[in-house]
Image 1 (cartoon, rainbow, N blue to C red):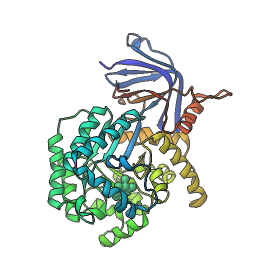
Image 2: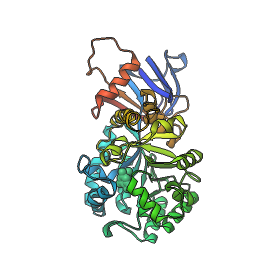
Image 3: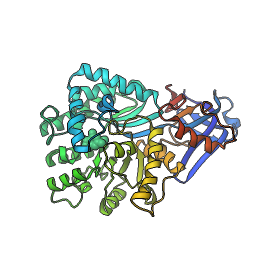
Image 4: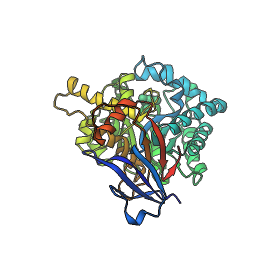
Length: 423
Ligand code: GUN
Ligand code: FE
């Protein structure tokens, strides 16, 4: 089946501190899973087909831990407002269009096509609140070959009339999507998606929490992104000491199923301690932190304290689906964080950042994002020969430079997901 040996210049991060760079290396893949990654071809693998990418860079596939599919259509537009106003003016009117399946078909084809052609091999995706459009998005994600969790968004308050359901409708739609897609796909799964506390009543959050536990479905949402949002949550939920506690009260904060929270820019000590205790994944979305002017998330602290952190494009808060671009922005923002917010903090290293983009987010999917033994084989192959240099470079330097210089044009020449070549 998909058993083979891949040959190339291999780079990956088994830990945030360790970049392994194996020039002229081999990954032995059996049934889509890495058996061995090494510098010489072992005798036991000599009978396997060779996928020869000599002198090309090979990374684990990139993981996008937070992206809004229905916002892809207006990426690069309207980064002139802060979060709550931006939602009202740009995001909600665009998302309301997905009630029209013809529009959804057109727009989601563009989104899934872009993801397929990017360096991303796994993604955790917000749809819109529309039931049928979200199922269409799941069909298209499955066709793309990219592994994903896709969420029908839940909103039952503080939302425009054309983007708001009753509590019952919202809950039933989430429940039905789980039932209707059970066993339907290989690479696509549902995820419960309360948009954020301001747009979900306590009753809806409570019912979704019970559903997560009963059906064993993971959860995604937004947390502590913007100061006005946080004040609003405090007014809406006066009994909670901090924002994350609201999700936690309803079992939507990692206590029963794996959970991703996007942003966490302004999380306080108690919220951070609870995320650590519950194993909540943080999706760091640097472009969005800048574009909707939220602020800079303290990612070096999260990494130092051992929280689980991955990267998100957060389209259309972020402008690009490229996780290479997100990596560069994360490194840049961590430097500004030190200059302007905390002189004691340490800027992110390239190894930490590549780790976040691969294994950091990949663990949300199980064993993904690394070339260690037993990991599902997701890989991208990059031709960096178009980035000339007069001086000799080590493989680690070539890898770093390819990420910094490639941006959205990654020089991608092949992409593997679970051992299948999809590009
Ligand atoms: N908070 C609630 N909804 C959204 C959204 O669509 N984008 C971002 N960045 N934050 C949100
Ligand atoms: Fe978001």
